[in-house]
Length: 484
Image (cartoon, rainbow, N blue to C red; front, side, top):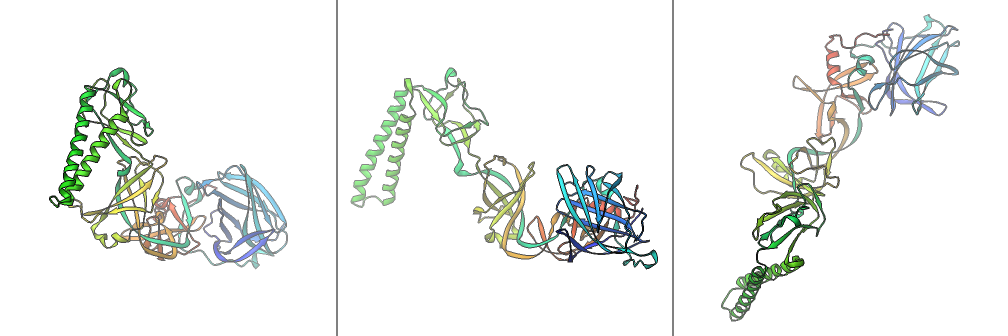
């Protein structure tokens, strides 16, 4: 049975049957055949049936059942149809996801139709709305004829990745697109240098952590046997004594106005640094005058230059440690968006190779200098990274929120298509019927956009499989005939 008609769901009257509410519908008919489409949170039902005339002879209903979460045909269900007090069960399966039910309706009238679907730990009652049973074929009053639209049969929809989503009203914050890269948070990076000159004795440094190893704060990273501990200590002691003597001299000169205050401050700082170096060297000293190089922060070893058996000099870099629980994103804001730079409030983005979205409202800094090469303004955000998903160096794309909030009808951006320079969306008006709508859009947050015209709240738009609907609109034979 080829049917191109359907009930169109609309907001309006509710018909209550045993506590189950049926959405109101507008009825359309072609050659005495009808259809109704109902969407629930978990199921889409597309039911086809002929003009219903009171008789003891059964007529066939074809029920196309689609699982919403993956838009796959439901194949493992028990289906029961209730029309008024008449109960009918599945008579046959006409194909994957298509159930045939034969039902006889002996008395004319208008009856609520309710479908009961159960199976695979799922049970649901779905109100199909009121149906008319006529005393004779001559008395039947067909609804308005279904004109126009795009036909794409359920069998064709099930054969490709396909998804529809209901358009809703909501609040949106205007955003602008940005690109960038994940970098270290400067407060969570530490370079570890050799405190003395010495040898990384092989036997004591075989367990030196490698790149990617996690280290706790204070953990021993390496052991240095100094080339001359006395020389190192003597040198530091001499530095401390010299710095303290110089500080004493400058203090006396400052008291009589012979040197400026800034020179006194420099002298105090030099003495403090010398004392700190001496204290750190003593604190790092282990048994037998060996020096233990410890991790100043918790994190992961990013680079390692310390090799067992090698010689290091004072100040040589041995390790770089990064704590990735918080990272920064360095964004590139186009100069054309410079007027919004100080309105930026939050960031939403995706990173290459990761199938999830990240958020942050912790803006760190906005540069006051434009990058001369790519003509962008750098913007830094701190992002929580407790799961360590954001690796340093990943490229990101996203949106930063600017300005205030606006409310209205929100359309998923995945539904927006550009055809010949025109923004359009495909609206599912029935199980196998679609309309192509030209859109007028407002602000966007990168995931959804305000709709000024084209679609209305409550309608269902195609967000996956739009190309299949487009091909069907060209009448090239994509899913144009039923197999049953």
